[in-house]
Image (cartoon, rainbow, N blue to C red; front, side, top):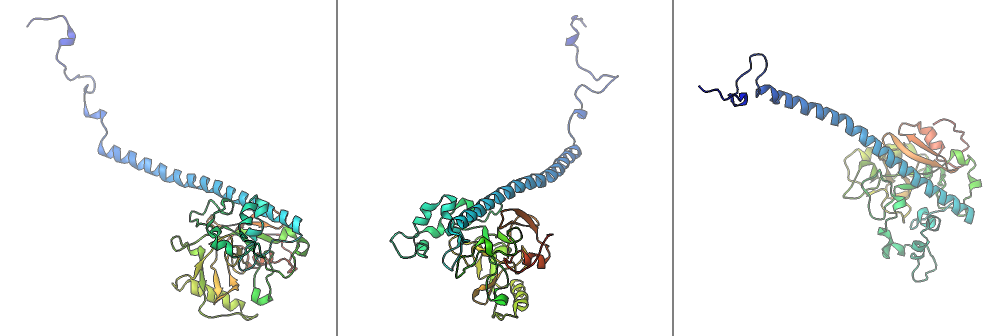
Length: 323
């Protein structure tokens, strides 16, 4: 055999003092691949909840910021008219404050033909019932409906027991002023939240049930509360939904302090004024609440019910310092 003098022409062979030049040890085995995928899956499982929490924190912060703008508009309204914005069956307080949120042009459309009442129900027939105002929509609620609202005014609690709405967003025979809130502006709720609902998007807390019979006596509030929960848990279909329209007041733009936050909502048979419309949100653990003086608090779902009711009344004489 003739030697060429060029060692790189020699055939490759297995080295006796180390691993093969091209051996199986340089490739992934199936076990290693599965372990790697499992590790990646665990890391993603740990990471995604954290990302979701960060996103919800941002959404909740934006939601609260919007609520504060609504409350600021209420303050401007009261300073101008010496009264809280009121409501009736056709018109919510969110309509009255349109100029204060720089939407006076929308308010003008409520009366296109010069009717005597500039805040009339013709607005719905003119298409405004389906007009969405972004300020009234909480970004934490994905089930937004056209013309819906996530922000609702404090109607109080126990209308049938007290024969009146004892909150601050009420239909009053005379102007209701800040000075009429004798429990103190810092201890009386003004604005909270609801979850919007429709036939297509029906979260349990967005539903309104209709009790099968009326319990409307002044001493029947406890029985009505029980009947409301029984009706909601019976599997009966809801009668309607919360937050369906910022234009109409009852029950879309009000809430009550009768039951806990994130509790059920019911009409008292066919009576909405005597109904229960619980504050609710998709924020974990509770709801945002803004008091009449403008300060905000996150209210836990498990708040003491007596405390929750106390901050829902404007003149109950309660003193609340811890909640």
